[in-house]
Amino acid sequence: MSDIPATAPSAKRFDLEDVANALNLGLIVVDADGKVLLWNNWIARHSAVNEANALNRHFEQVFSEPVSPSFLTALKNTLAYRLPVVLSTALHRTPLPLYNAFETNQRQARMYQSITITPIQSQLNESCCLIQVTDSSTSIKREKILRSHSEILKKEATTDGLTNICNRRFFDAHYEITVADAKRQKYPLSVFMIDIDFFKSYNDHYGHIAGDKIIKLVAATLKSQLSRATDIIARYGGEEFVLIMPHLNQQIAEQFAEKLKSAVFNLAIPHTSSLHSERITISVGLCTGIPKKNHNMLNQADTALYQAKQKGRNQYISLPLCETEEYLEQ
Amino acid sequence: MNQLNELHIDTLVEIFSIGAGRAALSLSEIVNDEVRISVPSVQVISTEDINSTSLSLSCGPFGAVTQHFSGPFNAETVLLFNEEQALKIVSDMMGSQMSLGELAQFEHEAMCELGNIILNACLSAMADMLNFTLESSLPYYTVASADEILHRLKKNANQPYVLVLHIDLAIEKRSTAGNLVFLLSSTSLTNLIHHIDHFLSNFA
Image (cartoon, rainbow over all chains, first blue to last red):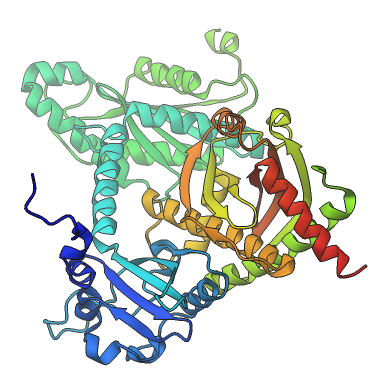
């Protein structure tokens, strides 16, 4: 069937050294004394040390820069105990002085490497080591790209598309964690419910595109009032926003509600169909206190917002946390 | 004789403590910080008696580093760690210098190396003390639940014995407990006992 004589096993039809030189990974063989017995093209290319200058020289002296101590320990261990060793990129980064390209004259960073050291035996029964080096730079890049994509998706999942502030989903999760923490650590929280006054009539009068612009502008204005990383503002619904801030006392929280109201008022956006003012305004419902077992701060802030609306809008109403809902109804 | 007596167990604890010390030294060199590894106990159980209690597999998933050793005795060795705790340790080890944080592939590779260091150190200590040579496959890393691990350990009828080492690992402020499991055939266990007896007879 075949033209190949039966006496020529296929393995002998090519030189294993050619295979080693064609491989897209680094191969080095060292003997028990650390002398280099094999130095493939890949290693020569990335170390800028050619085979002739490496063979029969002591491994450590072949490179012009030092090899990492943990690599030398691993090599010593493999030679002594004949057990294979792996050196991960994560823990070693660049054990050998290898570079991705020497053509450019710029000083480069070392190549990220992933290394395996396995014991092998020479034809003379000597204990030797095969060192395999792979370049992990590309996989690091790939993982970084995947990770940044997943971060973008994660951000999109928690951000409101129109205003770029947090969305309701993020707020609900954050609110739950924050309230639980405040209960445990016994510190005050302030929840602000904010609504744009007469927004429906603005939309009817100026159109939805103009309405969207107002929502964006108000969101940006409210957000610009915040300076601490712990303060979170989110779009709660159509033209409604919610803000949660820890560690404010009643007085400071009320001053802040006033500041929010003024910031939007001072934008001086015309709203001719507003029933009480010629410009865009907001109403704010505030609830401040140290949350306890059954307190629902969101409900209380919402009740306060309702009262602010009832009392004529463009104002804030602050309700303490301790009052029960029955009391408020009186 | 297929039973390890108290003296055998004490000898193994001694040997593995030396191995743990070597592993700690290697790891300290890598992380530039103090690493402590101890082996508080060693026990041999028959494969049938393996359960989540005997292996202290409380909650998973687990990271498992496996190597197959061969020589005077053959063993499949599996180092088991609670994956979440182990990953925290690994990311501490990686430190900020790498800024590879949370890159799963690299953490797994690092876990594989961590396991490889501990397994090789324990086995080389054994080889040194009991005076034999072992060969080993390359380590590989898998993630599995407690049930999957138990299933995998029990299905292997050729290896009716399990040598379990409890391992405590502490790096910087973090610590975790793990198990090093040796799956042994009865011939392998007999050979191991024989080597321990030989070692002990030097002191008799």
